[in-house]
Length: 225
Image (cartoon, rainbow, N blue to C red; front, side, top):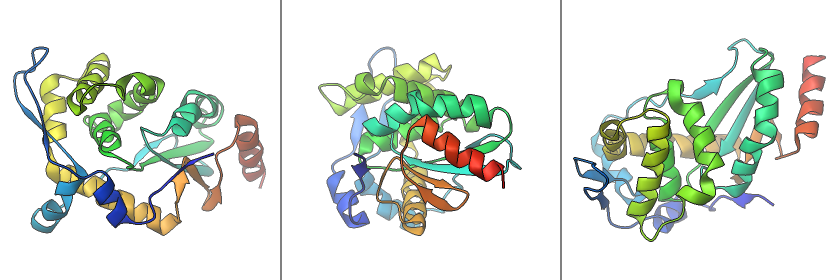
């Protein structure tokens, strides 16, 4: 039912390893961009001060209910949640101050990491809008004859969100940020015992991927306490 996480971080690194990729000058992109693979991040972590990773949250900070979602941009079940139940939850609970929603990235592959790096380019201001674009168009942007095609597809979505090629190239070249994102994912997933996506933590308790109606029952029960 859900996409299961690799059993160890070592397997994750091997599964998505490989040589670095270079985005060639296409579609008026003026600079070459060094695109991250996860095989490079260990050395970067050891030699570079890790940048702060901002938690991606939406909703009132003092909302009585907090939902943490662990999701991957390449996970079909995560895309289904975001185009379905999430939109209803946002309208009824997040936008009305009842729920604070937190998204934590999970990286199965380099495509998911690249998508997260693009989505985070301009912080919370653009993250949730970019997430909607990435999930809504998941079947399209993940297609391509090469990894370069996938990056091009992601950058097309970034342009729709108003980001420049220079901004996205800089984000994709940031090896220290890539290392910090992977490390943050590892810490959070291990701490919360996450082994599949999408997975949810509601007010500190694990909760499975469910329909909007089931989420509503759980949230309403917490609000009534």
